[in-house]
Length: 506
Image (cartoon, rainbow, N blue to C red):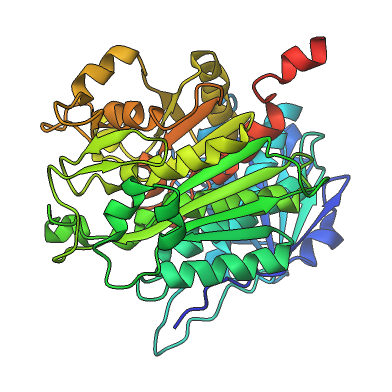
């Protein structure tokens, strides 16, 4: 069976200040060249074997799609030539990079060079970063257990020529490692990554990375009064569910977290007594993707020596059917005292997150972000190209959307007005868990979760509509996208935390 923690391929990324000459080019096993779609003779002359590239570009049919391939003269060096229109969005650049990376990996080279010519410095940085990241994603071996072993990609060296000033290789590799971890965990079979396996994995990662770890098992959660989480876990066959807390502390070990990441970790979701139909249940081992994104983000921040303390909370359970499973019209009490009337047992994610959010608020982080494959309504609203974001601080929305545009992991901000609470009022408890008809469920789920977030804690909820997209998305070639790791890294590194501006101006 696949191991719990992936082995990251040792791929070096080096940089040369100028474009390659002919001798450097032929020493590579593959050379990727990316130019504007209307490149002229002056541009081709910047490249080695310029006549080869100019002739290749001229042979391209007017409506042809995808990259062009050839070999350098009298050489075994393969060439992939891509041409894109300048001025495209970061996401569009990422889509082009993914296709170019797929063409390179299909040739299975041990080394690849990247030459991007003819663009502005800012756009060159985006395209170069995208190609490096796409190659790191495409070369990463996803878990599989087959009788016939498929060898991993041979790529071990990437050479970036004439890098733009905005290219940060250390950050690209950290983001790739976090994204790869998130994708790996999400794909693992549910009999491998069950709740007990998740705890084992978290402990191994914590030991390796120097994180502190605490596991709140069902008995500990009962003492905390975490009735919402326990309602979901009570139907499981084994008593191994619980909430994992990981702590990254670059400075004082006792420091409170500036950032708290929370992830839905439902390792398999049957829907409970409101049992899912076959097609809806088939990939429900992926219902823990929110926790995988939170964990992958923590790993990326650790690799970058992020200067702030970070907590990561993972709500790990299954949602099974059986004689002890929770049911419609049950009334339970969460750890913050809020009572909940259960409506639909397949709305288990918000139940497990409710107590996790409430417990995580005790340390009053400057920013709390949760991730969850929470609602089909968000997919219906956005398709699988975007994910939804919700916040109890409306002033954060411009930064949230901007971070999505800059990272290529696009998000859309939904309303969180308090009058939506009228749709989750209960005659028997403080709240109903969800509406009966499913209308606006992504918004109502967010309003529900808001009742478990302390007023003083700025909070962002990400509904991972783009967590799974057939054919891949942006930089990522696999259906499971790991969406959220690159987004959050960019949000935290490139935007101030709530309250930072006020602190700096005093």
